[in-house]
Amino acid sequence: MTQIELEQIILGSVLIDKDAQIEFFALVQSCEVFTEDKYKIMCNALKSLYDQNKPIDLVTVAEVVKKSGLYKNMGGGKTLAECAGKVSSAAHFSIHIRYLLEAYLKRGIGSFAQQLLTSSVNDVDDVFERVAKVQTGLENLVNQVIVKDEKSISETLREIREKWEVENVSGLAGTPTGLNTLDAATGGLVDTDLIVLGARPGQGKTAFLMSLIQSYCKRGIPVGMFSLEMGQIQLVQRLLSLESDVFAYKIRNDKYDTYDRQRLSDASVRIDNWPLFINDEAGMTLRRLRTRAHIWKKQHGIKLLCVDYLQLMSSDTKKGNRESEISEISRGLKILAKDLQIPIIALSQLSRAVESRPDKMPQLSDLRESGAIEQDADSIWFLMRPGYYSQFRDSPTTTVEESEYSTEDLCILSIAKFRAGETKLLPLKWNSNLMKFSDYETSTNF
Image (cartoon, rainbow, N blue to C red):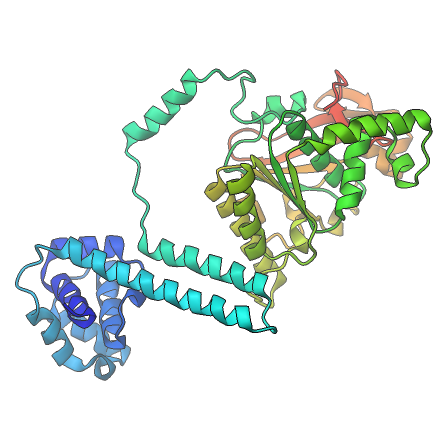
């Protein structure tokens, strides 16, 4: 059987058999699986009728194609008759569909292999960018062919029961963050969640992220981080400050004594064994980030992915509208969290509207170039340090959820969106010398 005959038999089966129609539209995601343009036209007509829940036969397909102006391109009634005449029974339709999809996969793989071959001998091409594009293309190709089976309710219940049988020492739904206050409110960092952390400059976004990373790595939990703003040396210096309790400004300015040097040396030995992987490449695109994240997951088993920060990423498809690009990136990060089955924390800039607000407390509308960020994120957190603003410094205390806290070292974490629970304000203790967060009431550090 030739490829053309195979395609004719499949389309003919869809024309005459209801069961074949159901199986066809469940398995064929794109009409590009066909090699001939006329069969692609016919396929699109069939899909149009099926989507509108209209009857499928020779007459209805012909009418749809005529209305599209492609009747002659399809070959008219002759093509329809040829396909219908090839089929007497759709008994082996499942096997025929398998052959069709296998042939499509082989053509696609061959095309991508040729692209890689061309890049290998072309000095102009960025070979890493080409590899990333090919990987994305292969993923899309496979996704068009392989349809994920639905889980039965019994399978889902079995997974839940298995989790019940595993001892949960923390008593949380997710992995502890290291902050008891935050864990009590959120249940920890839950797999597949996209968490967006926003704040104005100087409020401690990156410091908060580094504290979470320290907490994970000290427990031997692998973490991947994309830092688009700060270099790796600066980030490691911050980790050294957190781990050694040597003031951050001393490390930054090389102003430490013998005692500090010993603590830094001891801390560096511990950090050297941490399962932390940092990429500080500028101009990171979603495609390259996704590729690297998958590699980290496969090779190192990362359990948390951090992005600092979202607005510095570049879109793979330049749309000319920055809000649309950021929306594409946020959606891509959410999909990546589900693919990797890990939580992703992405930092985000906030608009200047916060500065004009008397209480300086960020709101969801402050997310810069927000687009779909609010929709895609499972949780959105904001940071605000009252002591950073002059109008609050005259007051020794600040009220958070009906309790008083020292204004000088207070950081308010606002859970502005929480898909799995309630929104609230949380008091955290901020140590400006170490750029470190802790539980305010207990002062339990990470």
